[in-house]
Length: 232
Image (cartoon, rainbow, N blue to C red; front, side):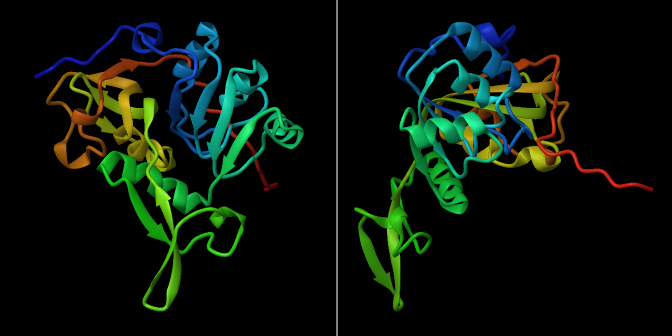
């Protein structure tokens, strides 16, 4: 059994360089790799291409990387709650590739599965389809979309073992399992790291074969973008 444990985020991010393409798991602020993002800030790497469903908020998550001008391009599904992301997009300071959410998810999944391209009807006849190959299947038009892969994928799981097997909890599962398969090097940070054999095999979402480095994270804030409450 290969032990893939590293001590901390500093050791896990060794090899990250300027100009790399990174995948960062999560949806909004749910299930984001908080420790890895903080280490990216400390390293001050720049000209990054970040693949993420969105860019968090202005003062947390990927939003902090945008504030420090470390991101050259975002490949995302929507601008979300990040005003700085929106400002940089509209001013032309940031390259942005906005992709329908389902297409984004499938392009990442395809990258992990070794499928270089596929056809989807989403976006046909819109700006999304400009310049892309089209084909008709059963009387309906489809766009060809290419896979997405990354130099590093950063994911956050609830539990993991030293062999890299991962279990995600609730909605934090989101983009994390797909991104874990699509990086040349996948770094997993977990809330609880256990010895090999302690996880129920039937509960594992991502097998350890996809993970190269794993560490137990700390000080998770788990912020909520829009907290909504009701009176009793």
